[in-house]
Image 1 (spheres, rainbow, N blue to C red):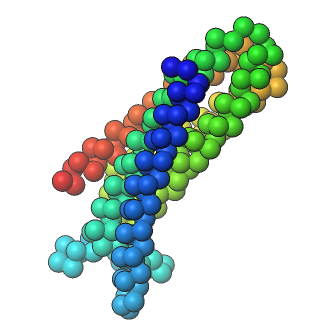
Image 2 (image 1 turned 45 degrees about the vertical axis):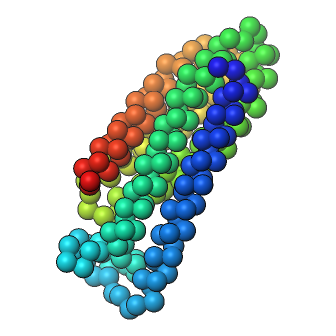
Image 3 (image 1 turned 90 degrees about the vertical axis):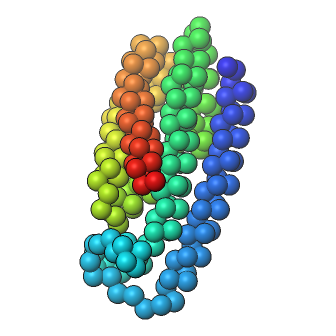
Length: 208
């Protein structure tokens, strides 16, 4: 797959995800707005089947209805799938295309623009995915969401401690040994994102 094809596919996927996310967020916002008009004081972290609401510990959060919660989980599954696709494309397309370069200068010239495009196309949606997963893990009592956050944490720790320093070295020196190490160590992020996505889909499926 060529670089233009990679960028076209990722851009199209981002547009589809953003369109779906916007619809979900709009629906959730309208539900929260209508919920906020009625006085409600949150004092416990419970799932009340009779009233069909999920409440959190005292702290001023508006309770999530089951519909809101399902919408948030749907959004999480979409963002997680997109983030996994971005992770796989970065590993199998971007990093391996860097290995096709024949000189240090060529590697440096290719790394800088593709690295910046990856930031906007993949990293930013992954940040949103992480924030949403953390919020849901905090406001609900579903254990599998905490495992999702754990997988994302592994991915971010690996990024900041291993992959990002290696990419900076490649950007400044064109070090091909650093590139080989980058490809191998990136399997940690691939594995953690696969684990995260698998947990999200199994967790959502268990809800029926």
